[in-house]
Amino acid sequence: MALANTPAHSGNDEAASRDPMVPSSSPDEARTLPLAAVTIATGEPLRARRFFQGAMNLQHVREALDAETARALSGHFGLALEAGTTVHVLSQPGAPGAAVVRLIEVADDLPTRRPGYDARLIGPLGFGLPVNGLDTRHAIANGLGFESTAGVMTMAFPRHDGSTYEVGEYHLKAPDDVLVLGVDRGPMQPIGPLDPALDIGGIAYGSMFVADLEANGAFLTDVLQYELRRETQFSSGGPNGGLRGLERGERIAFQQWFSPGATTGYLVVMAHLDHPDRADAAQVEGPVRGIVSWSFEVRDLDETLARWTAFSGEPAPPVIHLSLPPHGRYRTAMVALPDGTKVELMERRSPAALP
Image 1: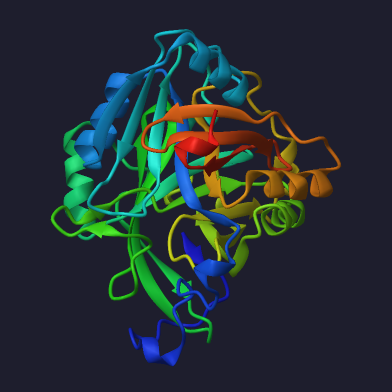
Image 2 (image 1 turned 135 degrees about the vertical axis):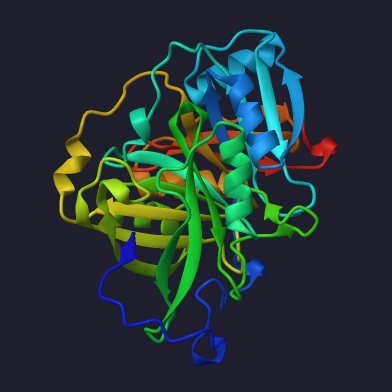
């Protein structure tokens, strides 16, 4: 992939312009915090653990659901879960502030949300981790049997003054048709915290394709009160690019949405500019494998749900109480982006404030 309509690379002089990853806002302004968790319904738990533990160096905690929690999560995520269902939580303790992956075991005959990693479909695509030494990490993943879509690539990203800087990345084909990116920004600030002993961090952002940038942006602004920190476009590299199913030269809108004051835990939002009819492409219906939700901690769940009601005109969804690692016990409710992607809103309170 290459960015469209951007000037030639102008070196690594960050004094020429502010790094777009650096906020001008304060964390005190945030009503919704950075991305906390990515929940994946997996029909390949052994392969998924080999990928996230072996290739990504994430640490693992396992929990078997009791009947009450299984019933609650079934409605929450739209999955048929039973008592004894296993949830795997994978995190990077050496990278504080990174999001976690929650793997919920489901039947392996469920279809995936994004068959063949097809970038033409609307909905969650994958997520990214900061990496130092992309070639080394790419080789580790390959050695464990996980290929990338196009090897290690270089992209040019714009600064605020129109100059560009180079970013290295790979798109690994993780189990359940989820793309997992490794990103190295070179001398620029990493996309999230890194474990210096491992040269890799935890989950730093989630990515998705949407049908309507304006409607999606209104949700992120009005409900989550996130801020749009970068907006540009790139041209697909076609069959040799990182995104499957796209023709060479197709223009893709690209946005980065952050919690105020944050430098990680953001959302990458993309849309098809040359083929807006892609929004009508056949989507997989019903329970699926793959990414089922983004999870965000909020300062005040009731306040956030009031904003949801004002935005959507729909009644507030039910609030339930859950206890899952690493978040402990929390109040939570599920809403949806305009295209239907589930967004979990989580509020942690002191034990005395919870039933």
